Picture 1 (spheres, helix red, strand yellow):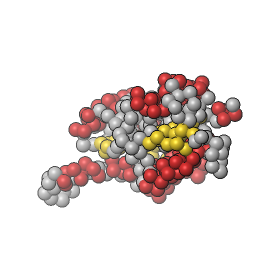
Picture 2 (tube, protein in one colour; picture 1 turned 30 degrees about the vertical axis):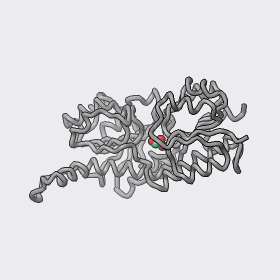
Picture 3 (cartoon, protein in one colour; picture 1 turned 60 degrees about the vertical axis):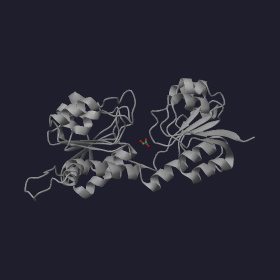
Picture 4 (tube, protein in one colour; picture 1 turned 90 degrees about the vertical axis):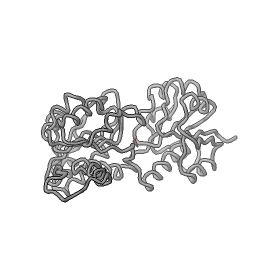
Length: 327
Ligand code: GLV
C-alpha cells in the first residue's frame, strides 16, 4: 500500500506529480489551512510537505504514523524540534539552493532603502513630480561604504561576497567567527554586535530565528546605529522588534529600512504603512522561479527519500535532526 503524504499548501503541479508517483497524496490547493484542519489532515499521514505551517507537540501527537515533515524553506522555526525528537519524526529543510537568490534580494532591499527607490516611485505615481531638483530624494551612498552583516552563514557570506564590487568594507557579527580563509576571501572583519551597529552604514540581518535571536535588534540596538544608516531584514520576523523600528524610523533615528519579514506575518504592524523611509516586501527574498522550483524539488527529494523511496531511499539530503534516522 502506498504511503500517505499531505501537501499542506499549493506548490508546482509537476512537483505534486512527482509525489503522486510514490504516494497517496492529499493536496491542499486552497488557502493556508487553519491549524485545526492542518492537524486533522496530518493525522493519518506518513509524511508532509509544509511551507511555514506550525508543527509542534499537538500536531505530532495526533499523527502517530508520521515519519517526516519536509519544509520548503531553509528556516524551520515553524518546527518544534524538541517535539520532533520526542516523537522520532524527521524534519528537513531546503538549504543552499536559495543562497544566491536571497543574497541578491538582500542587496535589492538595502539599495532600495538607501536610494529611496520605492519612496520616490510613490511620489512619481502620485503625480507629485513637477521639476528636477538638486535636493530631491537624497539618499545614502552604497559604493565605498561599510556593510554590516549580522549572521555570517551561507546567505550572509553570499551577501558579503557581493560587496567587493561596491568597494565596501565588510564587518560581520556571528555566534562564532567564520574560518580565517572565508574571512580573508570576503575581506570581512569580525566585530561585536555593538561595534558593528555603531560603525556600519548598511546593516543586513541574516540570522536564523530562535529564542536566542528574538529581538536581536530592539530599541537599544537601533540607538547605536548612525542616523544615516539603513537596516535590512531578510531573516525572519521577530529578529527585529518591529514596534521599536517603527519609532526609530518615525523619529529619523536611522535613515531607512528594508523589511521583507515581519512579526506575526502575514499580519504586520500597520504603523509601517505610513512611513516613507521603509521599503516593505511580502517575504519574497527567495522568490525567483528557478529558486522556488529548486526549493520545492528539494523538499520533495527529502520527503521521498525519508519515506524510503527513490534513489536516496533512507538517506534524505537535508535532515535537521539526523539522529532520528538511526533509530
Ligand atoms: C524563507 O524564508 C526560508 O527560510 O527559506
